[in-house]
Length: 308
Ligand code: HEC
Ligand code: HEC
Ligand code: HEC
Ligand code: HEC
Ligand code: HEC
Ligand code: HEC
Ligand code: HEC
Ligand code: HEC
Ligand code: HEC
Ligand code: HEC
Image (cartoon, rainbow, N blue to C red; front, side, top):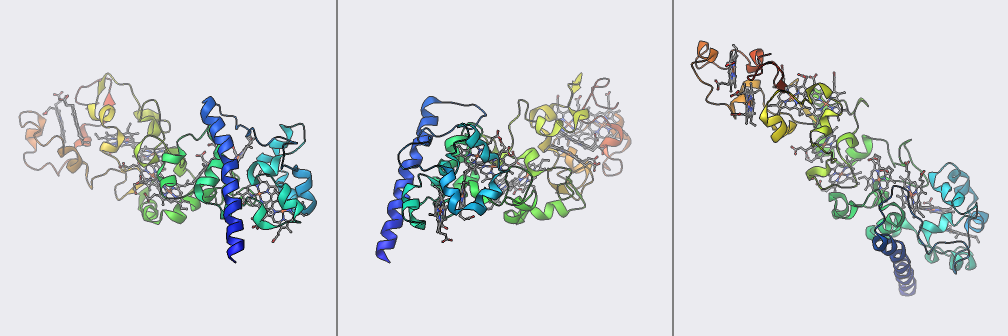
């Protein structure tokens, strides 16, 4: 038993060494392309590598499912001479020579998260450079917490489960907000979690996607409120949509973050002057919703008080 453990440790250690190759190379050259890169170590004919054809002699069933995998393109990148399997599983010579000894091959599902990530990021760091500082990586998740290379259950991006099931399987705490009377139609398939979030991490709080103007997260779909307006409601451009809205779901039909419009407005406008039309309604601001008159609440081209 001890010997087996030692053996595993050794293999894992070696796999670790092997893994530093691609990551180091990617960091060093600072490449930021969208095209995944191939680790320089994994070229056909390099010592320790046998090529996919050899793997498939024993793992025919894996190979059959693999034909439609985007990673089968790896082979094409090398004139059909595949190093495909070993780009992820590491050099396979020892595994093959031993007739399939499982401790002599890198198996991602049994490796520590950091090693899995390093393997995948060896090629994908260009698209997902922020993963290691994302809340997901910090919580110990790895690429294969969400992706499945050999048995994906989604048309999208080799995901283990389709959205939103994937996300909600862990985020049970936010599940309830999408069951509220008014919500973004995520369960209905109209909006994805990843329309607003990037699971791979960003520099924003809550893994929010980054856009040139941060409101674009919302205005890419809600174009009518984007502006620019001659008279901007300063808070829309300043604090952004979340100053008044809640993103997931709400008791309020307009997804407001307060139960009524007037309580929302009065957080910032508690002293609306009595000498304007407001004086007609002294002390009973509950009676008419502010937006009954201030209809162009996101901004107006005609009136500085957003009356029209
Ligand atoms: C001589 C036959 C043979 C060849 C060639 C071969 N394997 Fe295997 N492989 C096996 C056997 C046998 C097992 C153990 C299967 C089991 O226990 O379910 C195995 C298991 C594995 C596992 C799973 C390990 C685990 O813990 O479940 C991986 C990953 C793997 N092989 C990858 C490869 C790759 C990549 C190649 C090509 C570099 C390759 N194999 C070539 C016979 C082979
Ligand atoms: C893009 C990376 C990647 C490539 C390429 C890849 N694998 Fe895997 N393989 C994985 C990961 C990750 C797992 C762990 C289980 C999972 O996530 O599906 C795995 C698991 C396995 C297993 C264990 C049994 C299982 O299904 O869990 C075998 C056997 C295997 N791979 C063989 C191969 C062979 C043969 C090839 C080449 C045709 C190959 N792999 C190509 C990443 C890869
Ligand atoms: C040797 C380089 C390499 C490694 C290592 C690698 N990939 Fe890939 N990956 C690719 C290539 C090439 C494609 C196909 C890109 C394309 O279709 O343009 C791809 C495609 C993908 C896609 C699908 C993208 C889409 O748009 O549907 C996902 C998801 C993915 N890889 C995840 C992973 C994960 C997870 C790992 C680690 C287990 C991994 N990859 C390891 C090179 C690699
Ligand atoms: C928390 C879940 C999660 C984790 C962890 C995760 N991904 Fe993804 N990944 C997704 C989802 C969801 C998509 C599809 C939507 C999107 O593009 O954001 C995706 C898309 C992708 C794509 C294809 C589309 C694109 O963004 O170019 C690649 C490649 C990819 N992931 C690689 C990785 C790698 C490599 C890792 C580990 C470093 C990883 N992912 C970790 C959920 C995850
Ligand atoms: C395997 C479990 C798992 C899956 C799947 C998963 N997450 Fe997470 N997620 C976590 C954990 C753990 C954290 C960090 C702890 C926390 O903040 O809850 C986290 C953090 C987050 C955060 C940051 C929370 C904050 O307070 O800053 C967001 C946003 C998020 N995940 C969105 C998603 C989305 C979107 C998906 C689907 C693409 C997804 N997650 C899939 C487990 C998961
Ligand atoms: C319409 C855009 C949008 C969609 C769709 C969306 N989110 Fe969010 N999410 C946000 C915003 C914005 C925040 C930040 C809220 C804040 O800072 O007040 C957030 C915060 C979070 C947080 C951290 C704070 C919290 O509420 O726990 C998690 C976790 C999260 N979202 C997960 C998810 C998951 C899982 C899905 C899909 C089921 C999803 N989100 C869909 C915009 C969205
Ligand atoms: C991917 C597109 C998309 C994104 C991104 C998006 N929304 Fe939505 N939003 C929708 C859809 C679809 C509905 C439901 C419309 C319906 O039911 O008529 C909706 C509904 C709403 C509603 C209620 C609208 C009404 O007519 O009562 C508000 C408010 C809202 N979204 C605000 C936001 C905010 C704030 C953000 C940014 C955090 C955002 N949305 C991001 C698509 C999106
Ligand atoms: C000052 C608070 C406030 C801010 C900031 C704000 N909204 Fe609103 N929004 C409201 C109110 C109040 C309503 C309800 C109006 C009504 O009932 O007539 C509303 C309604 C909406 C609606 C429903 C349809 C419509 O046009 O009335 C959408 C969509 C919407 N907001 C999106 C956004 C987006 C996207 C942002 C960020 C660019 C944003 N809101 C910023 C207060 C705000
Ligand atoms: C988070 C704070 C905040 C909230 C909530 C908010 N506003 Fe404002 N509003 C502002 C700021 C800041 C200005 C710009 C004040 C200035 O220029 O003196 C402004 C300006 C205005 C103006 C133009 C004032 C003027 O002097 O011309 C009107 C009208 C107004 N808001 C109405 C509303 C209504 C109605 C609501 C509720 C739907 C609301 N606001 C919610 C912060 C807020
Ligand atoms: C019956 C219609 C009506 C209602 C309801 C109403 N307003 Fe007004 N409001 C006006 C008019 C008219 C003006 C003056 C516009 C002008 O000077 O051009 C005004 C001006 C304002 C101004 C800028 C000048 C000032 O008095 O400070 C603010 C801020 C404002 N309203 C906020 C609110 C808030 C907050 C509510 C809800 C609590 C509200 N209004 C409800 C009609 C209304």
